[in-house]
Length: 269
View 1 (cartoon, rainbow, N blue to C red):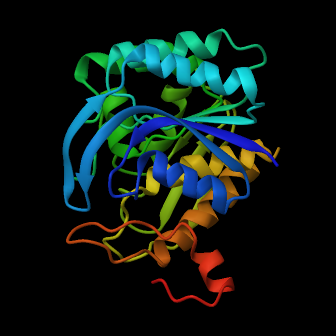
View 2 (view 1 turned 90 degrees about the horizontal axis):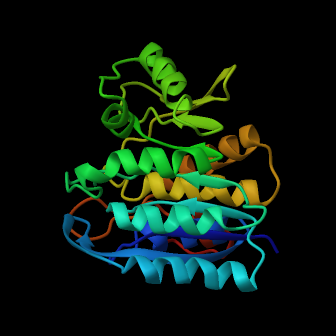
View 3 (view 1 turned 120 degrees about the horizontal axis):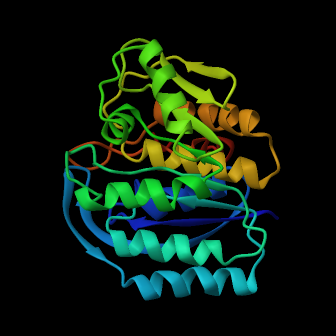
């Protein structure tokens, strides 16, 4: 069985962060492992606090996995401060034959809580972007990184090209914040490839970015091409959103195991 590692924060309500990543890994047929970078206090109504893990412990978690287990892909999610970012980058740089890295530059929660400190943004770009096989920013994250507004598909194309200049091999700009169909744009340095799915009318989209990026990582671990990995992950997240779960009083999570539940004859919507 192929194996994927998530390096990210923990979500107490299980819809995003390492919990979503591990569910997404499992649903997409790979064995999941995790390195926790932070513990968040959150539920479906928002994020209310963060406790960062000691950077030395972050490094040791990564080392412990790579010393013992062959890793086929790495997904990096929420890292909230400079010291954490440097710990991850320094540790990964020491690894012989580093597997493909999927970087989801998580910056702000859906409720508006800042998950990345302002002074850490440049460190994230400098230290982790060059290690990334693919980065997966949504439009607000791309705007935060680049410093300009993205209003339409042409702006997405420009953003993808500009983000590519910062070091990653591939850039996937997610278009969920624009109107119309949900179109994501993948740039490989030469071509812009679009992935289009019908927009699902639901408020329950907690953890969609985490789930998509970890599905991409799982598919890469299974030795799919980047294009196929993104295409299959896009189809997976669309189904997960379509059958999202009414949970709590706010924004519910996607349904990571919808296909598994359906095959088992369970009604979990």
